[in-house]
Image (cartoon, rainbow, N blue to C red):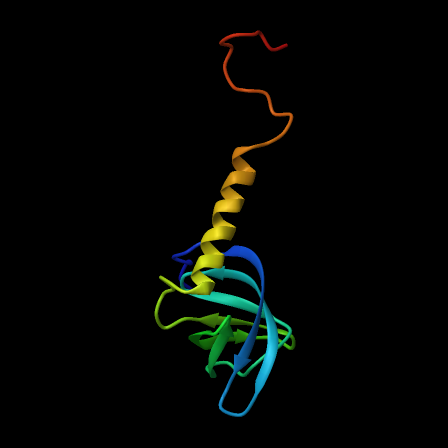
Length: 115
């Protein structure tokens, strides 16, 4: 098994997953430029599908599947569109949350002494 080339970011994005036979609603719960985990639906492994979000379509292949969730791999990395925008916003929010930690004392001893 190969390590992931991209770090997945936790999100909550409602989408519609469409195959040749059906369309079902699901929720992307983690996302990277190369793929997503979708909760609320499951398709057979190696199924081709499209993910519809805000009028934009992203194609994918099911890599693994359980009863109510599945992992989708995108044939082309996300570089634009509404899903990519949500990924970037979530990534920025995560970085901001880890950079600011209320109650944390600054490192070093310059200025006031910390006991």
